[in-house]
Image 1 (cartoon, rainbow, N blue to C red):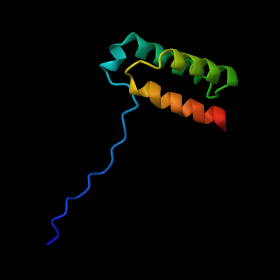
Image 2: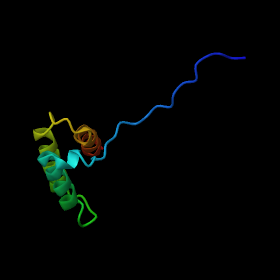
Image 3: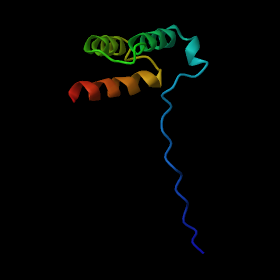
Length: 79
């Protein structure tokens, strides 16, 4: 019988906003910004740069979604 430990599946870091996080004005601001830039189903260059600027201004926020979005925006801009 094999007694080696069974590896745990890797879990992804949460990138969505929890109810508690939505009580934070920064999270509400982020949500409003995301709704605004995606309202027409397109992301224009100016909107992407505006989002990048906002994310950079809030980089120190403890919201995991911000770090996730910074990474995604950088990926888009480097393509």
